[in-house]
Length: 497
Image (cartoon, rainbow, N blue to C red; front, side, top):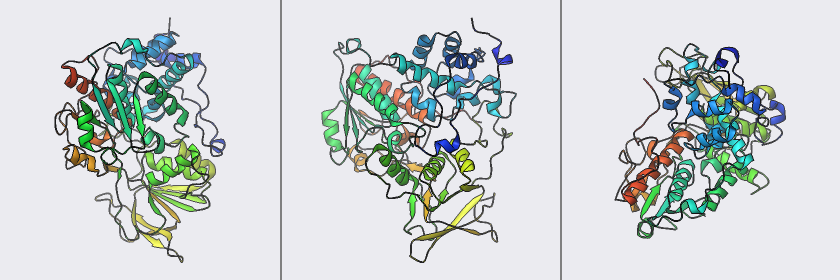
């Protein structure tokens, strides 16, 4: 029997990372192999099994955190993995990529202004369970006989193979429908494939999940651009329902002088080439940072991914410009428990930057413009202190740093314009996202929108939740009823004031 008072006696323990300098010599994941199971059990035992577990509300998937924590604490790893997989199709992705708002809402964090001091290490337990399930063969394709015998399945097209599209496809396939996923890139996975560096998600983990979908019966058609190679009219005629889950990949621009200089690129262009090198498509990226002074404009996860990638490419220096002021180390008064607060967090990339002494992170920095060098290409970046009132440049504070490569990591404004939208009768709202109703329906009957395409830029856990929810909506539309879970509605938002 697990110690029910372990939260009082066992301190929080994080998953151990490899040495930062060692990590810079390869593209493998930053963490050491999973800790011994007794260590994970001890961390899971810190969960208080609250009567009102706020971690449920903070996670859009409604993960049964106290249940699988209790089972893991008792050493019943198989049952714990089953409870985890009951609400999350891809826990090996969220366990690596999600910022864990569930931990911010952990009841143990109520009296701790610094979230990570006392909260249960939910994400680490989740990842240990997910990896254990693969190692033991518990997370396997569902046997065909469990769903193929149903005679009321229909044909469904899913456009986009990111986490929302893949979650929708798997749920609908397991409900008995014939699902085809269309992906315009040469490999499936969306931003999981080409937007996330392998040091955060090694691609063999994505490939084995795609193999599972194929074994279950989902058809993946890569290199096919829906709306161009396959027009919307053909999708409507050939399928009983269409799910548009193309993501939000239209990059936010920076309209300052010199934006068109050679050497200034969107972050996603840079990361895509780097991932293609990691996939073996070419020996060197055409945007390689090797030997260059690099400036990254932006302060989010994509900026951190660019930082870690540039360091591995042996950039001469890397400067990150974040227009936001330095976040506090503890919860601000306006972000009380259980909301996920904006506090300063050191990513693995920033840890590596410090170890390599390769650059600086500048907060409250407003980019003023890009200046050419003697060869007409990018030569420097001019920035100034950002005025806290309007984030504009404060007069008299301008600085110049040398730069031969600038990466714009300013977030995304919505889905890229696509002929498919007009072909399917979809409309774009004022926020740049595709419009849909609370049940994810959009345009004519039988067309649905899910993921960042309809929500806007968000977290992977929200994308998976949307995929599961839209699958339930499609199943109900096709059958008139559904047994599939719908964890959220289209208008659901994260906990906040």
